[in-house]
Length: 223
Ligand SMILES: [Zn+2]
Image (tube, rainbow, N blue to C red; front, side, top):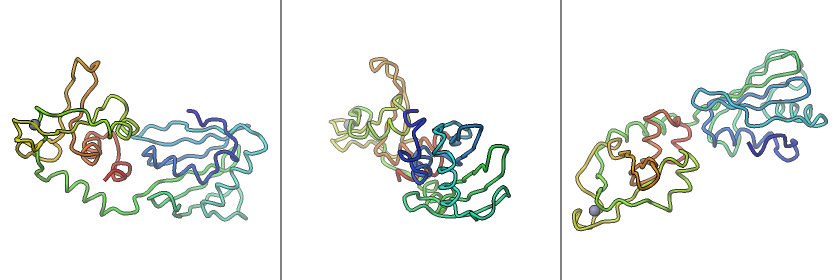
């Protein structure tokens, strides 16, 4: 990724949980190795590196900053610790574990939903009947493209029904369960891109949630 190998002066530790949250990570690992620190996040069960700090003078400084930010006892070195804290710009509680390793103290952060009620509402709303988009007048929703692509990748195209004669210019024909609202199809003229019909970003988020492409944390960011 583009932010690899930056010094902690350029990417402060406090920015790391926010980046993990944006990626929809369930946990974040800060692990020292010989001459480097690797920052990894787990997204949809897969652990991947998002940054590696190799700048010798800054490694220890970064680890100290992380340890302090996680509310660990700075006077205890090389013994396991647990802590819990909130970061102001991340909508999660963060539970942190510190473990001694051969090359220093490894920190694992788990991102816990701050508001489980919100997540439950998200699932409940998915079971509701909602107006069905008219397929006759469905067009790509260009306004929503940057956001949808950023979260779901470029293979998804958000659609919006603008209204036509067959839907009496309402953009709506009938009602469906919220999840059925979103139908994917392959359209040859758009380079085999998969289309996702959705009335709103909320629908996109719920669809991806159902398919396991995102978790409740990053779906709720769109809710
Ligand atoms: Zn129509």
